[in-house]
Image: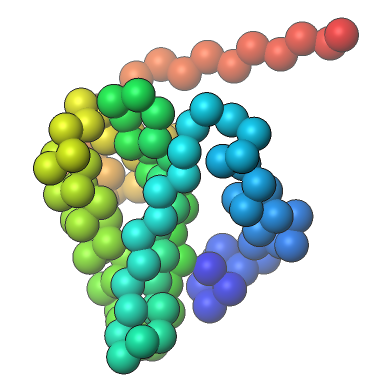
Length: 116
């Protein structure tokens, strides 16, 4: 993600620490797919897994070393989810065209907050 100018600004040390610690404190697990070229990691896909759902959170890749890495990892993630028997593959929020090209459907999201 540090190699992607759009995502680099949001990939802080705090966010990195969050990903390293989250699976230890919640019942969800984190699944990561790595793409390596000649022993060098050139892309990563991070997903949350819970019950029968895979939720794609974010990816990062080196466009210079593998310009189609994001698409490749997403296809690999979908293939793995099917083979592992997951019933839902969720792209989470966002209206990027590729999500709809892969069959995503909109649904209503609610946000609830409370001040304690």
